[in-house]
Image (tube, rainbow, N blue to C red; front, side, top):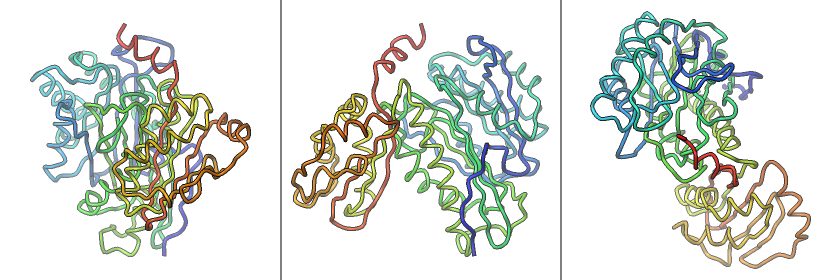
Length: 406
């Protein structure tokens, strides 16, 4: 019988046993004190691996290389990541550089090139400075508490790191699942999101890990919206090294649902952190949908709300203009009947059975001035439910993206 999921204070990707990480500054990004722009992660033992990647038609060669590595079916020992340059839109040289980056990192990690995943994030249309990449591999020192450094090395316009960890008892064995992520802009995932790395010391059969990850991503990171744009580099990978010593989890294991739930919780926490740190954001938006015809319809409604520029703008201004919610619901493509819809703003009912409910406007405005605004929707059709996360749209978003490369 699985125990409850417990959150770990200060959890980061190296909270899971048997993982080390490190990072450094090599000069890919403009210098500032304590800035990092390259990191690596190493497992003491081979890992089962699963990944989902951007569905953009134009992808970074790092995505191509990782798809090839994972498709080969072998185990993985570690990864290398740089920030500042996306290694996208640079022609064939990008693939050559991504392969070389994996090879250089393999030497530093003491493993084979085919056991290394490679990631890049930053400006599109610029080639990787391979001399600096090699310098970074030589400089990075891997340590058991290096998770925060790795998280810092991934940041671009992020204002803070995104890190979390949980533990859960599976059949008498305590296992850890922990992760890091980056991303503040160009976020409307169509697979997973930006860059997100998860490590677990649970023993998990690779086929099972690969079977559950798309659905976990669909209910978490794929329910996130910052600005409606999907990156060329979006990547989510999970590494499982078995250091906890549990009986390997597969689809038939009694604790398979508990492991999936714990993995989902890690990604929910990272998704919330990403939404809270959207470019220029001042508020987190949460859309909770119940009563939809099915889960796909619920997801359609929830993500349409958090991706609406009008809804985002209303949240920024603490404006309870619920007509914008009706607009978003109506264009979502989900099945609904107006006479059955209930709407809530931070728990205050504003529509019931399709009819407006009198509410104290000033009180709702005051609620919306907080750090989090939750929209509740009940379509009252069936039992489909979903949650989406996003952020408000501020002047600062325009400022950041009007001068991204200048």
